[in-house]
Amino acid sequence: MTLTRVVLLGPPGAGKGTQAKQIIDKLCLVHLSTGDILRDEVSRETELGMTAKGVMDRGELVPDRLIIDMIRGRIEEAAESGFLLDGFPRTTAQAEALSEFATIDVVLNITLPREEVIRRLTGRRVCRGCGKIYNLTFNLAEGETTCAACGGELYQRNDDEMEVIANRYDVYEKSTAPLIEFYEELGILRALDGSLGSERVFSEIIDILTA
Ligand code: AP5
Image (cartoon, rainbow, N blue to C red; front, side):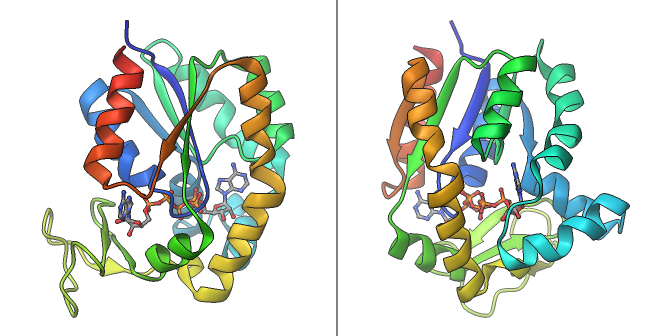
């Protein structure tokens, strides 16, 4: 039986977005990334986007109530087909709210040490067209500015500046890491070593989800 109501947990840069794109292709789940949804709100200059922009650029968390209101309907809509939550929940209040409107089958916790987080995120580039994620250290030539998949422009996220990355990691440790214990106590947490190659992590995830 395939597990279809899945949460991806882990520090910034652990590889959640990278894995999410492959998992949804393989298992036909709906990808719900709060970071991607917020960045879209920012680019469309909506009221939520205007509120979120400064918070995101500093590497802080957008207030729980705004996030829960933003994501709740999307999760309820995807419940039947199955969903992959990427970046939500991120606080105990968000996890408690989630438990009131959805049942989660498994939480995949991808771990990565702080120094590797910083190394990866300073080298990350993202395609404006299709969202494909690259890294200068292993799959992007220096000076390359277009996406190999769709020809879109590659850009560096505003929050991938060194000081902001360090703050995001601190915020993760303070506000999000406590969810590891929260889900361990529910017996649905599975750990993955994010420092392994992306293909190895993906294969371990598929084993867990389809066991
Ligand atoms: P969000 O977009 O969710 O960012 P994040 O959680 O900080 O995660 P990232 O997207 O930075 O990292 P990732 O784990 O997806 O890594 P990736 O696959 O790209 O959130 C952004 C902001 O939005 C937050 O700071 C907050 O302000 C706000 N927000 C979002 N959700 C919120 C919520 N629920 N509540 C409140 N606020 C919220 O990989 C990173 C790099 O490593 C890439 O270059 C990739 O190519 C490379 N890589 C990946 N895997 C491997 C591997 N196995 N080996 C080597 N390199 C790898």
